[in-house]
Image (cartoon, rainbow, N blue to C red):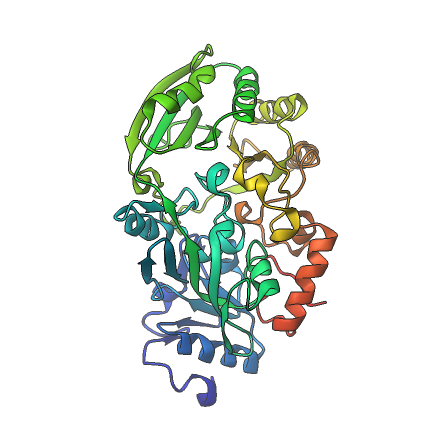
Length: 441
């Protein structure tokens, strides 16, 4: 470790193997990492020093916010922990959020002022990773992606320069941040345009029986539904007593109009096998899930499957998704409605793919001995591959794979070329490779 790059960091900021804090510092939400060092940045200058050190030592950088990313498990490199950079400042509808903040904290702060930003579903997810990957959330049909609400950012480049980004000052770089991942620097502050959000109506509908007619009705209902409504469909196996299995529809309606929400959901509530279990006005922060951190003594099983952004939830797609779930006992099926404001954004306006998609779909079998074995694993993957082929692109935020080949399934060739040109300008040495990596052109 060179004094010329890290000597200005406070004691305890740099954590190395053998230090008393090492096990704590290398743990992330989804597991235990094996980096070369961990830098716990408490200022922009700390970030700059860490990047100078990484460049001098030719070490790749993994930026950690909420810590849900699978990239924390890749050995070596510098883990740059932004946890302390978690400030949240509200000025009217402009919200400035530190790169280490989590969505739960942002939601609670904004709720105090009757505001909201469409984010993910989980309170502990980091603002940074979700936004840079796009960010499909509960208000995606009304407000678009988290990245669509991004109006500016503070970015530390691979050279250690600190840039203030707007569409006027750095349009191409900000374009790349809206869905291009963590390839272009360390975002130490995100600037969002928030929306009025006094409350939401949240509904949960239990589903029993054949999924096919329910999914068809869900598709047809959302084609003309008000933009205030976003829904998910989930069918999960019984994994343990604390996580009951079964199928359900959850719905989020912007505002406190229970009658309007109930009217929008009426076609679903009229179906055989669909039962209302909750429909009530709630605070937006209260609907965000709390996901327990990974238990090193009980690692999650592997996952055979994937996700895709579907232009249409066709009868063929419904049949394949329902059949996949039925054929694999320990499998999960998840769908989220898109369209509306998500589709209003021109494809070339952001790096995020498939603006023509109306549904996001994910399915996979948990790789549990006795249920999945070497003989049927390729067959399960082939079933999923046939489903993915119906879609437009893969959503990077919803994969736990670190396979570099996924980039070609996430973006069009034209988008990859444009991202690679931005990468060449701002990170020609590919310091930021611990992500769905765009290589410099």
